[in-house]
Image (cartoon, rainbow, N blue to C red):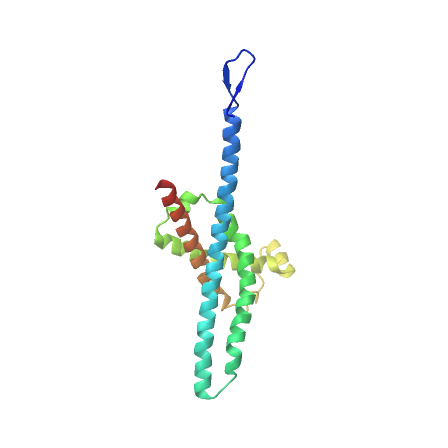
Length: 190
């Protein structure tokens, strides 16, 4: 079907350019959905690591409380899960603000070729950036203050534990995303 007949019987190539453009468009669409899927898998892995970290700490604290006959050891694991659910929402919004645009707009070749140390550093930097954007865009008062070039004092009060969590999730997410891109690149070459 790649060729059609003219009236005089000779063969004429069909619009090969149109076919190749359509093929390229489908290929780019498939590649973009693959990049989004890789980035989302990275987010899920980062959130899973955070859940394991929170549960491990809750179990350790629970054991300490049981040994000391103090506090409420039965509340440690449910509290860890509550913290995780709250942070998982923030990490998804951060992924929408930072992770997804990186997956869509940075070339996959560039990310796949990054040395591992640079991947770790970039991943560690993206989480706090996403969290900062969430805080800046979350409240009307912070948007109004930013419009005048100010950051409100006390805007980041009681957020100390969120920053390391954002670093953990974003580092795992970005390193896994880059590893998946490298694996795809190796499979394309091989």
